[in-house]
Image (tube, rainbow, N blue to C red):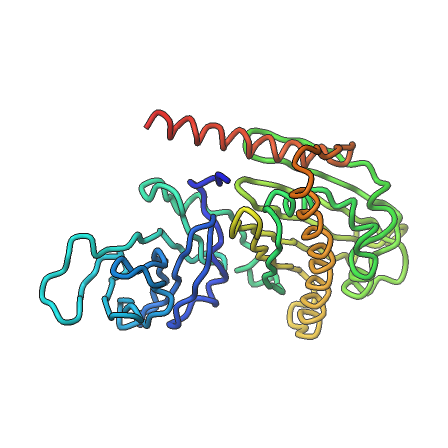
Length: 340
């Protein structure tokens, strides 16, 4: 499967990258992630050119990585700087180094043309650095193609039926959505006035009655979905004492049939409440594992029925528009490669 190459993807949370090399697969390519003694985060092709053993089995030495098999040592640019037992270093003794930038608590990797790796193209996620926001975060790996996970996040009508224990309410599936798009974005908006809060919202916002609630789901390519969601009390107190959240979903294809979902749930309330941070983390992991059970099985059905097309309904309009954007960008990528 072809992936969109000239985009930034989350290789992981920045905190995951340490002096112990981490093996990770991004866009179906093996990558070794490590942090040098000086603190620099580095991404190299996870394959020593000598005997093709993964470099992630190696050890960090200063500002370099030593292969754990025969000891060849590589700098942060992938150049071999030492071959034990010989003075000369063969010209082919080098590995590909991927651009890697730490921003918004993530380590962002560029799998395409290195010259096009502009850090200004990294998605803006200010809620993860803002003093007036707190967040819970995590990662879950799905056994599915990333497009199915994007479908799930863009169309939240499923929450009524899948997530009643946490974020789902009866009104979500029944409420019409407003969908708009341009060449690089899809926005799905849903407003639910005078409704019952979800279990998570009831606990998070200390709501005792009905609420006015909103969801604004924004997709940007290649695979980011940011959900602006919140609630305020309905009735005479409308607009007062509400809660505002951002559900940040950064999707990174691992292989054509497995996907990393790096998520964060940012909030502007109870900032110093560690128990609330833990509660939200547990509730969101429960929610996404409910999705995983369904989507992993969905992928098995898709694989078993290659001749069958999915049926789209009104709530899928945002999903359809997002897929069209990705398909157009893939066509443009292939045309560029064909003329290179």
